[in-house]
Amino acid sequence: MNLLHQDKIQVGVTPKVETYWEDKIILYRFKPVVDSLNIPILIVYALVNRPYIVDLQEERSLVSNLLKLGLDVYLIDWGYPSSDDCWLTLDKYINGYINNCVDVVCAHRNLQQINL
Image (tube, rainbow, N blue to C red; front, side, top):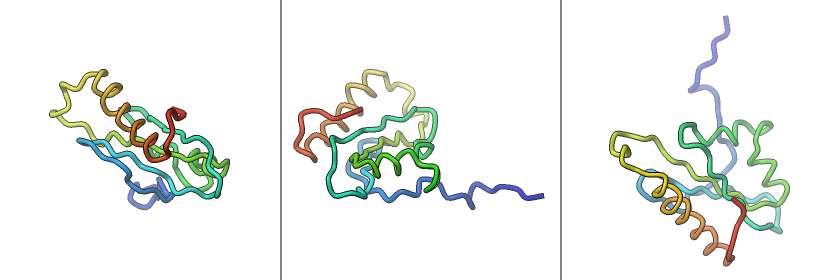
């Protein structure tokens, strides 16, 4: 019987760098694969799942395909919640964390707006 072990499966394989962090969240920018970049896209993945689902493996990666299309791809990783986070509101997530990440991406690319 062949069992899959999580530590032997590589996910989230597309190269990326941390561009911003606040509390438990990390904003990643994926390494571009083409020279001309379109308006950036910020992927805001679900709070209850891990964001590597959009970058599973090289041949099964939404992120990789977006990069090949020339998009400048950013992703928010919310981290792992703890009891310290029980008082966080949707307002904090939307008007705090997401807004701050949008501001960072806009400043990085000198733009007024991005795709979300």
